[in-house]
Image (cartoon, rainbow, N blue to C red; front, top):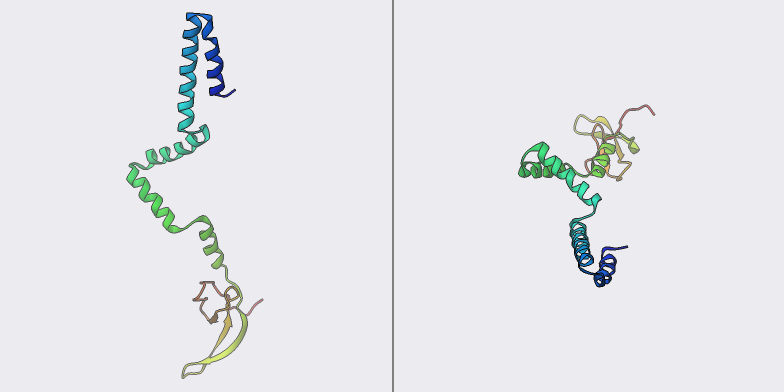
Length: 139
């Protein structure tokens, strides 16, 4: 039974005398108070909000807590951090060939990034997508 239904039932009790009227009004007041609490938020929502209150108490002022949150967000989302960590795992370049550069004609390897296809040169990683490149001869 919802609060509004309970209020309707209590209104029907009014015909039973003064004591019933006082009981009815007390119950209606209590139910209206419950409605006000529900308007604030559910228990789950309030528990979630308490996490933020705890962080503010732990770290000091609200301004400091907000600055720390902004600093955390500037690092990136967890997904962005995972993607950046994945780029640090070196991959072999595709289609590696030998090429001669400069007036000394020293030999370097040239290939293509396995992620974005951008041309890469030994000993560097990919400047386009920042993928780390494994230039070792071993498989």
